Structure formats: C-alpha cells, structure tokens
Image 1 (cartoon, helix red, strand yellow):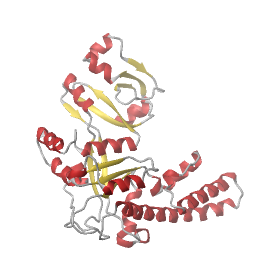
Image 2 (tube, rainbow, N blue to C red):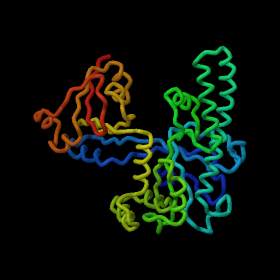
Image 3 (tube, helix red, strand yellow):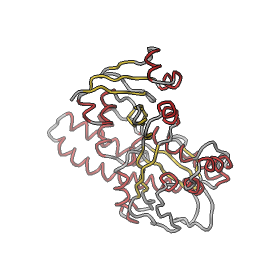
Image 4 (tube, rainbow, N blue to C red):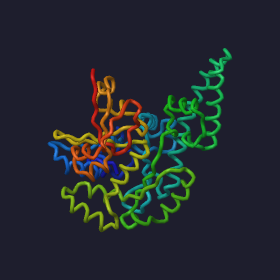
Amino acid sequence: MFNALTNAKALAANYPFATKEPNIGVITVPDERLTALAKLVKPQKVLPTTVEIVDIAGLIKGASKGEGLGNQFLANIREVDAIAHVVRCFENENIVHVDGSIDPVRDKEIIDTELIFKDLETLEKRLEKYKKAAKTAKAEDIKNVEITEKLIKELESGVSARAIDLDEDGQNMVKDMMLLTAKPILYICNVDENSVVNGNEHTTRFLESVKDENAEVLLICAGIEEEIAQLEDYDEKLEFVQEMGLNEPGTNRVIRACYKLLNLITYFTAGEKEVRAWTIREGFKAPQAAGVIHTDFEKGFIRAEVIKYDDYIKLGSEAAVKQAGKLSVEGKEYVVHDGDVMHFLFNV
C-alpha cells in the first residue's frame, strides 16, 4: 500500500517484520483544480501540495510490553497526525499471516488493544504526577486528576480516546499526552482484485465491527495499485483502473480521505512563474494561510486579494475577474475557504 501511494519501492516481503525502521514517503495530493488553473495561467511551473506518509511495521500481540520490537513501533505511531490502518481482507495461501488465518476483525482488535495498553501506561504515569500536585488542592490540579481517571476508566472498558466525550480541557490534555488512540483513523481493507468494488465476506464482517466508530472505510487492492503506480502512461493507468470497475486509482481516494481526516483544505496561488497548491488547516485565517508560504508573510500581513476558484475558471483570467468586480480584498479576520485563489500583500 505504501509503495502504491509513494512509488518508494520499500521492501514488502512475505515474512513478519520485513519492516523494522519506518519508511517515509511524500505523496502528491491529486487535485483537478490545479490542472484547470494551470491551463488558464500557463505558468513556468505547476506545484501540487503534498502529504507525508509513514509506513510503520505491523504490531503483534504483546507489542505494548515490547514484543516484536513493539515499543519502537508504538513510538513511531506517536509521531504521526492520523492513522491509516490497513487490514488484510484477502485469501492467498502463498502469503503468510503472522497468526495463521485471515480475520481482519481479530487483527484490528489486536492493534486496538496494544494501543490502548500503551495509552493506559501513559495515563497512569500522568495520574501519579497529577495526584501529587492535587495535594495543594488547586482547582486545576484536581480537574486534571478527574479527567485522567475518566480517560483510564473508558480505555479500560475498550473505548479509544478519540471516542470519549471531553470538554476543551480534556481535549487539550489528550493532545498534550499524544495518546495513540486519540489519533483520527481511516481503515483500508486490502482486498483481492475481484472484491475491490463490492467487497467480500471479510469486508462485510469488518464493516459491521466498525459501524459505531464514525470512521471511513475504503476497499483497495494494494497489489494492483502498486502495479498501476509503476505505469508511466496516464491513459494506460486509466485503462487498468477502468478494467477494475473504478473511475480513478484507489490511491487517489486514500490520499483525499487522509486529507479530510486531518481537516486539511487547499488554497492556490497563481502567477506566470508558478501555479501552486498550499495545504492549510480548515479554519485558518488569511495571515495564518500566508504564513504557510513564509513566516514573513504572516508577520507583515497587510491584506489578501481573493478570487473564488469557480469565478476564476468561469471568467478565464485574473484580469477578467477584476473587470467583473469578483476580486475581493480581505483583512486579518478572513477565514480562507477551500479552493480560494489568493495573493498576499505584506510588509516586513
């Protein structure tokens, strides 16, 4: 799956722990709007936005206690912003399974349990610290103890931190502790080629097991996706994809789902030198969005000139947009929208 997404040619071998050190790759976010803008502007360069993806080795039962290099792998997970959990949903006697049989529900539960155990370890250490501090009877310390005890109770009952209802203080505490089960999650069912559209008995069982999690589940045939990724010709890729009954490579769906999971949106800059996509968090105001280009843009922000993507495409050029009175000038409080085409004025 990692190779399909990144074309990184990482070792994917038929034995457990083929991956020990995490593989890191950068993936381009597919966006037809960038292509459409480039056709109108005809820049010297077109630069898409990217997301970094980390391939972490699989966990086995006992990982939280250090089994199978578990502590190392769990530390790798702590560093990421979201998890794409790939579960095996295909039969193939030539590809061994560490537990000897195919059961995606069991596999997911093993991972969940190990992540919960690791989080409980973190919480119990933190609780000790908070209890000592609470002896001074400060309201903040007492509340920290209450929140931590609530988290421990929920996790002990098998609930992931991301599913626990917390106030703002609780959410900040979870963020500060970098709890593994608090990270947003996407499930990728790795299926055989014939199951990529309608699934199979394994995916049916898996979907049933995660129905209360409010998480997106994608069906992907990773082996075929890796082959598609290696094709140079776009039409060849498309033909391959259509033969599978799909409109686009599954990797595009995975990348977009990851983007959505992280609450990311894209804005564009468009000029003769380059048309470029930029990644920001949903809710960013204009100065924060400018800061993604360069910190000086945020520090010295004066104003932003904004064109809506649809207006740019419909009218065909920046000059035509200005003539039609569709360019707006926005200040520091402007919340950037997905697809905005922006030009920043700043002074440092």
